[in-house]
Length: 319
Image (cartoon, rainbow, N blue to C red; front, side, top):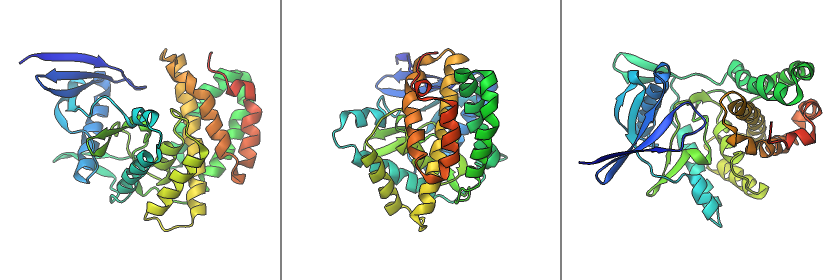
């Protein structure tokens, strides 16, 4: 039997991906540096946990974790992003994605996932510390990079103080399985199902996090009317019988937190990792932040944040 190995486009992580052809069958080979092999263990264990709960995640075919390599099921070439770009009516595709989120949220939360009979993977929690750890990427990378270290010091503490107040307003507890990167490039139509990939960073967190990741995805611009329609569909399908006010506030806070993190990550990918291809998303990321800051709870943050980074800088894509 002939074997062919072809590199496929990598993501924003440290991993590399290859398609292995074995006759008329294919699989995906993932490699990582040896010191990062735990990432692959987490990916395999979380995928199995999700599959056991009825979520379509890739099956591990073979692995040599200590050498930083694993082989998984091939979900094909096209993510949901491809189909959304080809479709004139995108709402049904988003409805199916929300159905997956609702299914995820019905899974009984556990803080340990079995790897072996004597070994477990501990899931982190989206506590206050972890929320700040992520939004600090904006404060420590993007902000000093775009306005200068000296000027950024003037704003850092003020922004962090306002974010802390907002994080403490979050209503729902961290009692839900959260994918943590639930966007259209990590969702893959496989026959009649939607498969999800990149699950290794799953966490116990707020139910609105994945909803915000999907609706306020920086990679694809969709009309506000469609965003609102998707949110209303989630409210209708979710078993969380709470006032929509609580859902919406949590959604807005976590959308801003996530997109501040993304500004920091994408700036760092360019500056540190020499990956400038993500800079093109920065202006739309700002538009999403500005959109969600229309909620009156962000009055102070909006004043400080937009005072720190002016309109011209928010449109900048070259550094």
